[in-house]
Image (tube, rainbow over all chains, first blue to last red; front, side, top):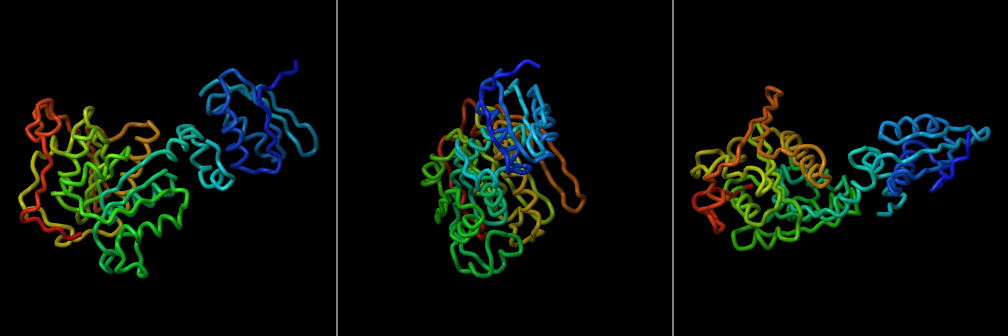
Amino acid sequence: MERIIADKKIDIRGLVCPYTFVKAKLAIESMEIGQVLEILLDYEEASRSIPKSMEDHGQKVLHVEKMSDTDWLLVIRKEKD
Amino acid sequence: MEFTDDQLQRYSRHIILPEVGGKGQAKIAHAKVVIIGAGGLGCPVGYYLTAAGVGTLALIDNDIVEMSNLQRQIAHNIHTIGMPKVESAQKTFTALNPDVRIVPLRVRISKDNILNLIKDYDIVVDGSDNFPTRYLVNDACVMAGKPLVSGAILRFEGQVTTIIPGRGHCYRCLFEEPPPPGLVPSCQEAGVLGVLPGVIGGLQATEVLKLILGKGEPLMGELLMYNALNSSFRKVRVPRNPACPVCSDSPTITELIDYNEGYCNLR
């Protein structure tokens, strides 16, 4: 897969639900449509729930990757205000 | 707006709603709401709007807390008996959410002060318990162009409507004149189920938040009626009256009226 350059990156390692999604959502809100957000997290459940919630809210999940034993990387493109 | 960690936690269940988000929560934080009456309806409306993080909340009431209020007026308690209701409610609301600026106004509203009292606020909530106030608030909101969320309760029944001057109906489109004194029993004479203002006040607070957020459909041109005994809600359409004495294009009422004569002013 070609490398996607993120417009914004957030590190929410250490946070649990629902704050993982709260932070991710606020980050998306602050961006322009078409921009890409990269999220680094270590709360396993959020690696599934954030992509699902982002899709529900009309955003595009481009990439989900387990980076290490503890960390996940999500790449989301903003499609909707 | 930037949220503190405490605010992120406090408002997290709002922020994750698609209809609210951080932007909606910021709208709530910048809203200014004035509530007429810190009694049965004013308490739950104020309590929930405080929990929601409304920026400024003014409370208007001239009465003091009495033991007989505590069956339904949930912002007051045995330690605040004898205290002005607006101060008692302020203590309760501030303990819930110190983000909210509470403005206690211990005054009796009249035709001489109401326009001045509501002028700095975005939305007016009527939680009064008498017809003179209800008509005064309606007329003042129509004249000032302020959205009004009106609620009323008696025995086991309550009603809610949202008046947006220039767009929907007003209270006088529904009932042109107040009923004659003594025809409709007051809450004091007829009784009221203590939880009823919680239901109706909850609906009023919901209407206020929808207006602030610009989401959903407010009860504009509609009256929602609740019957606690039947557990039923009924919604009736209330068209705008083209000959309404106050909100029509050629109103006959152009000055505010104090209908004090013969009405009981007990809360």
